[in-house]
Amino acid sequence: MTIIRLTVVRSKALLQRCSGWVRSRSAWLRVLIFLLIFPLVCLPVWVASWLGWLPVLGDTLTIAILYPLSVLYIGVWGKWIHGRSHPYRVLGLQPSWVFCRGLGLGGAVGFASVFLPFWIEGWLGWLEWQPVEPGQLTIAFANAIATAAAVGFGEELLFRGWLLEELRLDWNRWVAGALVTGIYALAHTWGPQLLGLVLVGTILVEAKYLTGNRLGLGIGLHAGWVFSIAWVNISAWVRYPEAVPNFVTGIDGNPLAGIVGLSSLAIAGLALLALPKLANDRFGARSS
Image 1: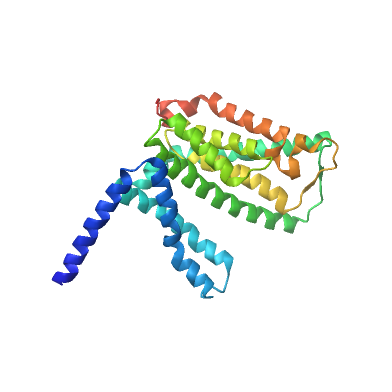
Image 2: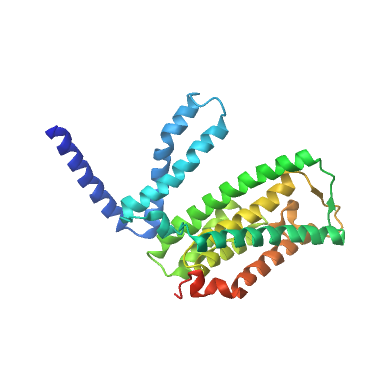
């Protein structure tokens, strides 16, 4: 028992020294260390999948395991490296009425800012709505909801949660926000929708700052955007007759790569700034 106890004490001391060393490094080195450790955390799952121990659902089951593992890893990092007693709260997950209100508002604005342009383009004859069976539309709806919830929560926790707070330890909020926006956009694409993703990233950083460092509004916005696009694409609901150049409606059918979609996103971002309750103390926003 004495040997075991001594081993535990020495292990804790070593972990504390390691965490202290990582904490004292620059933000970029901390981010690199985070990314290098993550594959080791996931290694058992990948090995089990490779050996065929997760055969029932294949890749779907593997992702279902890796997703919560990733969320847990972000929390452990906050506790281990930064000594935070409530790491998820620091990152912006603060369950409350304010958080839920932001989540609902964001979902509504996100959905409207993508679906309304589809409707306007249809009314102008720039796209054609295709007949879709109710059953197919329902299945597409369910798939889009699941995708939107997973992507909205996961990406906001990673980019506007962990990464933004990590960079804010070394830079002011605006520099950190600009860096996160650039990283977010480049991590997704180098193609025509890059400008759209920069605009999306900017709005999502704005959403967090407007609501007192909370992620609720951003998760809602992100999920609303993903849901609208996924529902239309999965159900094959629209067809573009090339009535106007595709840079107007969206290159390759992507609203983020078109003038109409970009304009709608910009209006949504400005609308958030214009909503008085977002920026006052009752919504929980900080003045700095």
